[in-house]
Image 1 (cartoon, each protein chain N blue to C red):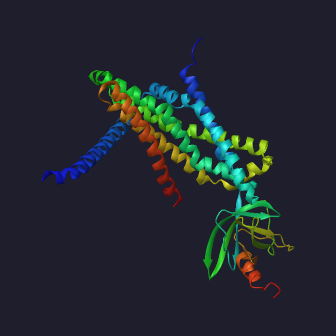
Image 2: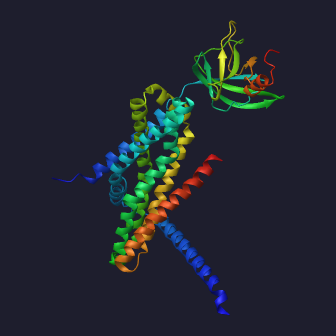
Image 3: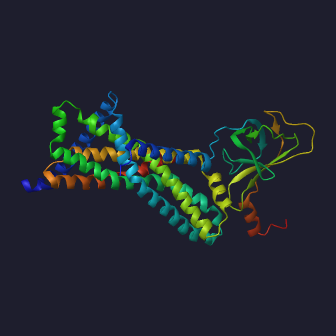
Length: 260
Length: 148
């Protein structure tokens, strides 16, 4: 008799676990945002975390940005030259960088560079009971650990995105003007004619929300680490996978909201 | 060797990032930080098929303003244009809707007139030319009506 219920039991337990996780994540972010409002504002901690999230990721952003722009120009050139439309190479490169590739790739790089490290750091603090120690000293762990990270993420991501886009545009410029003999005026004037304020704002909103998302998930996964060293590795994997997947999914919804 | 001060490094990072943001919005986008002064002029077209808001208005290929609004009044399309203050238009100037390239976007081209009377802000251009209907032309060509 009871074997009939086994599949339902499995489905039910997964659903239950999923909803519990969602609730925990929501409670986590609400209490972080709540503590964000009250002083003391730990400016030193925020600067340290901007150094960690933003500055340490900059070399990777510089490399990926310029090479993304270069390969984009190269690929698009071969597609456009068949229609004799090489003149629109600049707008294609700049538009895809500003609207899509800049925010998404810079967010993925931050996930890999800083998000994983954040989870591991907070996770190790959890399993070595340093977070409990903070609690015992009446230092609010949300205020001390989580809030500076989230603020640093929200501040750093748009800046990293901007660096990425500018380098990508110049990478594409180097390829199309240096290699493909396109005139430099065509490249930049095309960009000026096509890019609208709304495109730039869309990229900006995207990277702001990604910064929030990455730091939220990384801190959450680290904060609820369990089971020793193995738990830390598990939490790190989960945080990187979940952040990357959510970035791409959220990117779709952001785009569809902004376009409609 | 002393390590760099964290605050200085972060300061440089923020500075470079903001510089890139400004570059994107001012150089790549067309955000006018100062902004010129414009005056409104209306133009009545029989059709504005394919014309969109904020497209360019050109005289002799030079951009002199943009399309503000497109409204339907008495079954005619009334387009209001913003023209740069230092560009004066005669009241017999001709506004026509053209296409950039074969498949490009539509824009408004103004051909200056010879009249002494200049248009005041809010006045209407009466001489207009609707866009060339490419589909109709191709249709005429396919069905052999080119010679009329």
